[in-house]
Length: 158
Image (tube, rainbow, N blue to C red; front, side, top):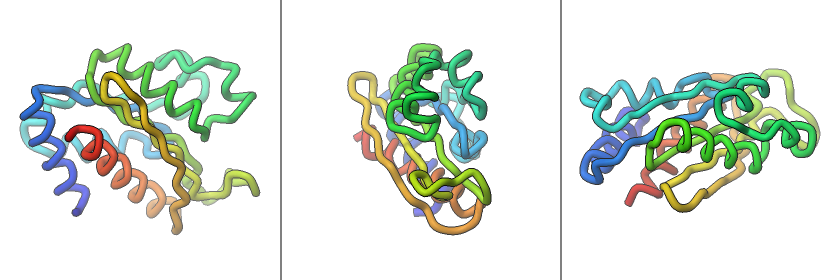
């Protein structure tokens, strides 16, 4: 499915559930929220979007514990799961997605090369997370992250 098709399907599901979604984004810079809000009527099921590019804002806006950045880094399972919890707590939305990654062209390391992205999703009771390695340039990594984020939201909203 295309990004628009994924977003439209998410809207149908969340409308049927009378539920809302919140996004917490780093490497996508609001791209997930933008894709979701392309859908007419999304105001009924899109609650909020947080773009927390810096570690300081992940802590300030989403209550991500500061020590995690030194212990495991911003691109990590622990950070995206904390972002989900913070976004849900701040917004009251049942469903959430959070992403943090290295879109490139710089910023990668042998342990976390360019294209490394952590995603997490919350459904109000559980949090699920995945690590991906997306190929391509910055735009490709970001686009693939948006697709994976929407696909994950569809998986947890069944």
